[in-house]
Image (tube, rainbow, N blue to C red):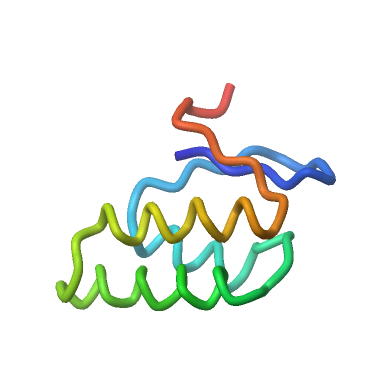
Length: 77
């Protein structure tokens, strides 16, 4: 998936739960609310093999909605 903050900035392609987790920890431009924490936990669970990656993806999208971060399935141009 591709992410971009509502305030601008470059698009970033995230391919794995590890990349999503790194983005949440180091590059997250939005609000760090409850959904952000849930997404971090879901990514950790996916990396540990405890949950499917699709759960982490859904949690990341929910955090993006909460934090006003745009998510797309298209690759960055």
